[in-house]
Amino acid sequence: MDVSTNIPVTADAFMAELQTIQSSVPKKIAILGTRHISLTHQQLIEMLAYALALTGNQILTSGAAGTNSAVIKGVQRANPGNLTVILPQTLTQQSGESQDLLSTLPSIREHSERRLLTLAQASQMCNQEIIDDCQQLICFLYHSSHTLQEAVKYAMEKHKVVTSFYLD
Image (cartoon, rainbow, N blue to C red; front, side, top):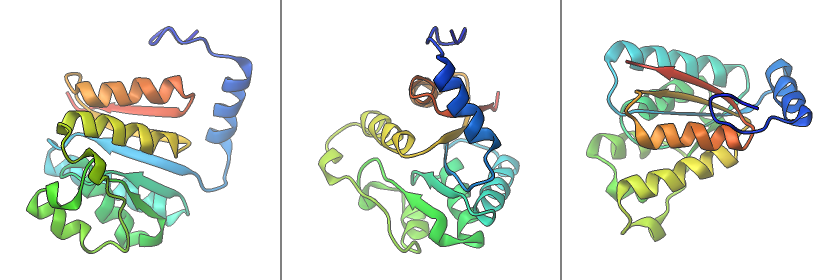
């Protein structure tokens, strides 16, 4: 049982996680996180995303400022073909700065059917979609980041490899 989540861990789930960690085959890695991060953290995240994409990994993220824009910038420098960006809602609902960055990408996945949802509701659905499509989640968050805490919990329930970096 995973003590932090009270989720039973089966031998099969453990072996699948171990294989994912040890595999040298490129993976689908989701990188999610808070919008409110320092410039230093943005630079570190950009470097991490760059290195992961450069080594052939497919990177999935969303489209907001902060963590996600750092991920996008890093992957764009390494290999834009290794980037999948899934928006919680539509491109026009993003900030002007995010729209400028996203408009440089070859393709993004929008969800106009979520246009009338609150950003928190749409973000939760978006995070779940991203997590469902990855093998590993790297998350940059604060202990007060409710939506991201839920994403981490969801990823653990789905037996994904999860690395959480708490910024507080």
